[in-house]
Length: 286
Image 1 (cartoon, helix red, strand yellow):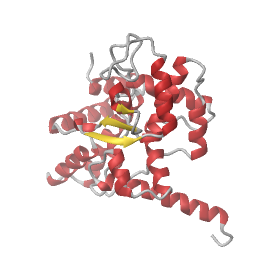
Image 2 (image 1 turned 30 degrees about the vertical axis):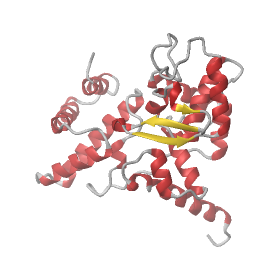
Image 3 (image 1 turned 90 degrees about the vertical axis):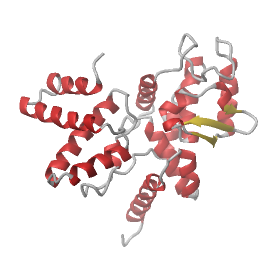
């Protein structure tokens, strides 16, 4: 099996038909990133860019290497191997402005969640993991990794295994808990606390992340959304809607499993921008 880097370079050459010199530059920059042996996270990218600057590289060179790494991340997102672009979350190193998280409005969320046909088992499954991603702000990897025993029916809580194996417990809405009960009763395989909540057809493994991406895009199209969101938009929407509703940012940080409060504070900019847009649209002197 080809490594992600080689597959990306083949994609650039075969589908994007980039020039040979450009392809060579991409290859050199990605090889330099791999030699750094850093995690493909916002913290890893930030450390990498800082290392480049400490070696005396010009800002133009650092920006180019940053852009190559960002293109690689976009490719990984497109094939379902990455949930969001960590390069876009890094600010300050190259004086590049951080992009705001992309979210859906409450009305769009409602349309998306109503799109699955809940009259059949597959539709109920799809509706349930859509509901759980939005109701509790879970990542795709966290949803597909849920076990039956992770859902505390009585308390209305879910135990989540996040990045780095860190666990957290988050609340989930009562209607979602009730949907879990109905869904589990109709599964064809025996259920134990260690069974995957969303099993593969054979019942021994969990659903793949790529399948979740496809499902979200299919229902987004069915719901008539203007753009086809990634599953991570549900997580972003969860945080933004909580913040807009008055939830404390520290509580949101804990529910999202963010190690740094700065990561969670991105959502304050989304909420502020929505306020500015509403003001400009409605106030006669805006």
